[in-house]
Image 1: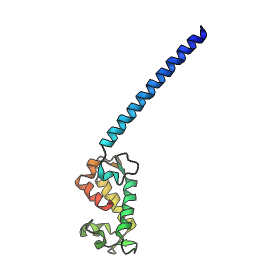
Image 2: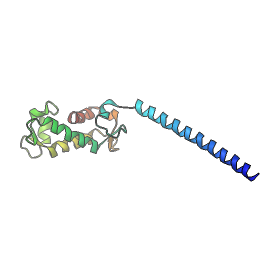
Image 3: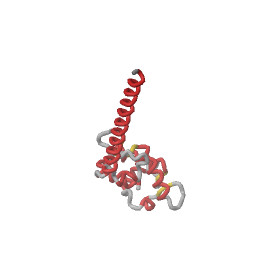
Image 4: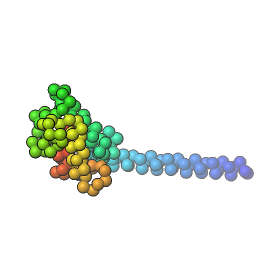
Length: 145
């Protein structure tokens, strides 16, 4: 009698566990489907963790990569001509903190940070798709792609 009760309880536990696992798996698939639907093409290039948001660290990494790509003469600075229209002459002069007519990597990344902060009006430390497509977000994107 005791063995039968134990078998019945064990069977109920196994059945309940399999239902819970199936429900969890279905919930995971639903979240994955929503995540894929919310994908922002402009962010997927910069967002290595694919959370749908760009953090400042991700923006700085993308800015560093772009700086190196733009620096054709490999002289560790960018001149206005090397930027290819990514910055206006006024913005370039403002970003040139040491006023030497060239942007060092630190100055370029400082400008990325300034534009990141400007493009993030809700101050949540991340840029979502809608913020990236705003006017200030597009100015940031110019330095990252």
